[in-house]
Structures are given as C-alpha cells and as structure tokens.
Image (tube, rainbow, N blue to C red; front, side, top):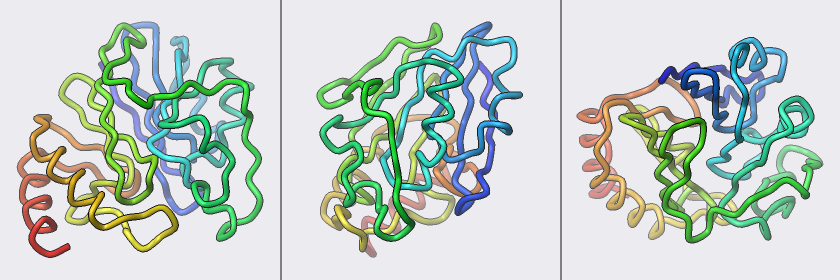
Length: 201
C-alpha cells in the first residue's frame, strides 16, 4: 500500500491517494484534479471517502466524480449540500453532485481497493466527521493534527463530541496519522497530543 499526499490551493487541505496494486482510494477532495490525476495513473479509483463536508475538503469533488465515475462515501447523505455542514456561508456557494453518495452511518468497515477500511465516526470539529484506518495508517480529517486538534467553534462543532472522539481515537493503534491539514504525525506524537487536549479542551 502506498499513500500520496496532495495539498490543495484552497486553505491547504490535504487530499490522499491510497493505492494498492492497480486500485486506489481517494480521501477528501479539496485538491485540484490536475494535481490528483497523475497520482492515480495505473490504478482504478474505486471510491472517494470524505472525512467531512466542509468546503475545503470537497470543493473539487464534482471533477473527481466526473473523472473517476466512482461512489462517494459520507457520514450521512442527508447532510450533503446543507449549509451548516459545508460552511458555504463562509466560503461561497458550493454545488455537489447528489446521486453518487453512499452513507457511512452505522458502517464500521469497507472493503475497497483490496484493502479493509475501518470507519470511525469522530464528531467534534463537525457533526459528520469521520476517521479512517487503513492498514497501519489513520486518516483523521480535521479531528487530529500534528500537535493540535480541529476547531470546535464552528457550526455543527461540539466540544463534548470532540472529547468523546479523542477518547475513541486514543484506543486506535496506528503507525502514521494523516491529517486534513499539515504534516503527518506518529502514534506516539498523537498519544501525547490527545492526552494534552483531553485535559485542556
């Protein structure tokens, strides 16, 4: 398995291409398609997984769907396009395709690209936040960052939800944490990070 990180021009959100032999998965859709496409050459993209619906993580989703013709997994399809979840009021109008979504609500595992994807609902930064574990990698969206965590002062954010999600992720083992913004971190670094914010949040 190989993980490739592409940083978007919009708020520097991260998009990840996770490839396994001749298949791949894309996590988040903020990066421009012209920068993502070269990282998928030689693979069939089986799905796009969204960690949450904030504008900067799905701004280029329509171009991904048009290019790869694959399903898009979100926490709850009822939230798609709703202003509190996209934060469109902060960033401008956002148009998303609605006929290709699949709900992750109640789903704990997916089998995609020959890989097992463990799915964790981790609200706090947003009500629909998801984290994904693939092999020894955790994709935390905007829940965990290097030496920080996601904001809890936005629409659908919730401090108590974040504390519960931190407790959940504290019990998940991994080698590398790939965040929605910034650089990756190690398991040891995230254990210290989570410990700190469980006390200080």
